[in-house]
Amino acid sequence: MSQDVKTPDHREAPGHSDGRGRKRVRTRTRGQRIRRVVLLTLAALILAAGGAGWWAYSHLNGNIDSVDLDQAIGDNRPKKVVAGAQNVLVLGSDSRAGANADLDHGDVSGARSDTAMLVHIPEGRSKATAVSIPRDTLISRPECKDADGKTVKPANRVMFNSVYSLAGPACVVKTVEQMSGIRVDHFVEVDFAGFKGLVDALGGVTVTLDKPMSGAKGGLKLDAGTHRLDGADSLKFVRTRYGYGDGSDLGRIGLQQQFMMAMLSEIKKQDALGNPARLYKLADAGTKSLTTDSDLASLTALSDFAQSMKGVDPDTMETIMLPVAYDKVDPNRVVVAEPQAGQLWEALRTDQKIPAEAKKSPAKG
Image (cartoon, rainbow, N blue to C red; front, side):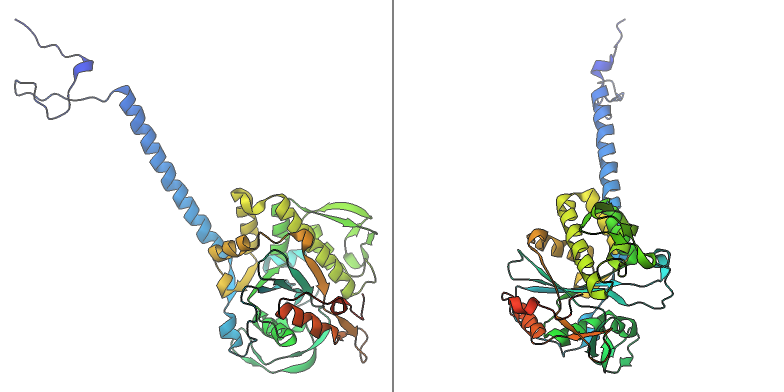
């Protein structure tokens, strides 16, 4: 009597009859099992990567605070003259709140705009000009709304850096627009902790001094020469006043501009915008202490804006201090110098070359 002997090489798929009414059960070959495991593993990795990507995007987006400038300022704003140009107000806040308290132990309440630069990017976006506004400049503050919507009355002969503490960043934007007649397209504010985090995410920034920094009044002490600064020392560097030059706020502006150029050069050197891992570190560090206008208040918007600025070379970027003169009533304060300041603002507003005369400040620092 013959027997039907089945071998592993001839097993058939489930549901197929062997001709005698019995079902044959299929078992997968070794190759089929391996392919299935690989496909399941790939599917799991794709889902995990997608989830991590969404978490990272949501995390960074959630870091960013924003202010709606149009709502906060209203319709009384300068007209845009050159459509393709961009004007960005960059503020460095000296808030001692939260993580910032460990970075500066000065007995100062509230927050002020420790650094203010209006960065003009001409049409074509291949170069830029940064105009620093001295914090001790006496200006006329316009009527503003504070963060709670309360009206802050206008005032004359108030220090520029007091505007932020009294009425917030939108009022600083409105004040700069009133001073210059230039429409501010965007504003970006970074505080102590954000600044330190950005520098540390880059692995430090290299600066060169042509003379020693003495470290007076708790400042940074450095010999003349080249130094690689971490985040904490970089913060001391840009805030040094009494230990370098003539000890004035005007002298400090030179250090701030020098450091900004060095930092931009470091970002370009490391191709940080083209390296996803490093870009995430920078974004995470920067957005933790970042406030922008509402049009820039997303990772996508910030990324698009940064990519549009890639043509700007730090080596060709021009840094200027707003021309000021010592105040005749209080020599510890400065006032906007005319006609130099007017010529400077007009050139930026119309996207023209800045006259040499408009770069000369009677108060040197």
